[in-house]
Length: 377
Ligand code: GLV
Image (cartoon, rainbow, N blue to C red; front, top):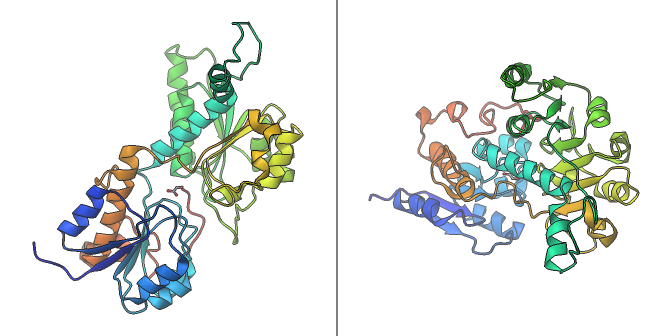
């Protein structure tokens, strides 16, 4: 195998299969060994050492300092994640460095996890298992020691109708749910019309007694009418449609007391102090969270308060964590595959070297200037 001269620094392992594939293609790959994030100074040092590409993930801050260090040699940043709020797009464009992400391949895994968190929370599966394990289960009883809430036939508000939000809606439709859609940037009315047809057909075939519905509404309407509110917006801290603390005291108060909140998007979309207060004072029925304002969750987080333990499910940013989704080297199936293909497209000058035609490049404007934000996840 003839060697290419490209050097890559990866801030985390991406799986043996993907790493071996790169090495077999002749890439010199240096991987940070720990599961934790490397210090920013190490990423800067590696960029300055002349690597051609960085493989990064959502906890690595990639900004002007990194691009300046890699000036003249760094050709691509390949992010193994769909979200890229850790990468400063304006800086990447200023240094004309394209970056790639791993959209699409994790839509179903992430939506599935959001859906299952919703079930775990509403049907109180964690309390049930804990009670059995702790030998506290006394007897079968019609309603003691507690009941849960059904999901089937209820109304969900999907905030953010990008790829993952749409995947979530498809799963909810199978559970006969009605859907309130809200998106601050992009409304996919075509998808809603198609889903309406699916709902109509299911009703016509006698699969559901009442025809389900789907519609776009305002944020306020979505929050006020839903039994479940599921977040699927990207994190946007500033600009036209920021999503930072979209869920705060004001918006939590708009939700129904019986409603549940689900977050498999980004932690800072929720003001966690406000949420802890809302759970404690029972403004809403419960929350299931896979992402946090600061990860890992700090020991003194108000979300860990034992007083709200029965209505607050917490997970370790695990929604896309299915084996195939994370590790497959097939770019149509796995994040690892998409990550290395995005990197190879740029370095090997696929698509005649035209980054605007490379499917996994996010900042297609990198070589022409301008910027964009607010794309759905
Ligand atoms: C996970 O959160 C991702 O952005 O891929």
